[in-house]
Length: 347
Image (tube, rainbow, N blue to C red; front, side, top):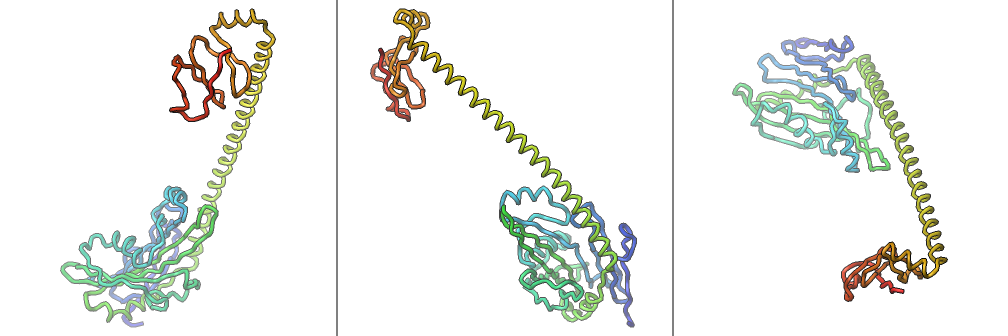
């Protein structure tokens, strides 16, 4: 094709093979390509631009961004610890909103101040978003949108239009729906007033973009392997958590059995003590009370005689066995405390 040439992007830092190819005008220059990062969700992504000799026209591709979200707030907090460069925790949003926040704001920060000229949805059949080689996705799971902004490059007024395709997947779970959504974006730019007249050129470049299936397959295998390794690590953590939980359950059962055994011994000792008190003679009781400073009173809840500390005017008790001793004849705990307190009569 006269006036055009085909370029190949070689993944020099990764697999060492062609990642994609496309057709561009003869005198245009290609920048960028494949970038590798320490990210198990997307270790490599395409980030490139083909630019006219004067730098005023360009076709640019941005990294694919992935997002996770949950209807459960506690799951969201847990997800935030797994955030990475290409995978973020964010509630689903429309394509134009996602473009402004995650592409235009960070990638065009140096072009400030820019003006937003247009933001709107895009038809799936629009030539700037359609991809015949991509698998068919139900229309209710994908949305397309665009945002056009204006700014200056070397005192030249520029218009740039960003396109985004956002796919959504909702997975029902016991702890709330888990939502996966991802965004693929690109942009075209030209001097102000000339963007629409060059749309056929940009559409031709977009249609010529062909990823290398071998490179895509190797990247997919790598991501799958990393994911399986992460899953195995999570599963191992889950095994440890279950073992820890079982250990805690065993400790709780041991503490419960120990408490029940102690309570049985206490009740047995108290019963034996009460039996001994019932059998003692008046002289033995008098000697014990005199030595220990105790006196005998009637417990209206247990309906029997018990020993309480002597030397007090009043003694009160409740159904829980709590006791209050007072030196005032007018004291009544029911006036300022909860619980049905009853007076213990002296014997």
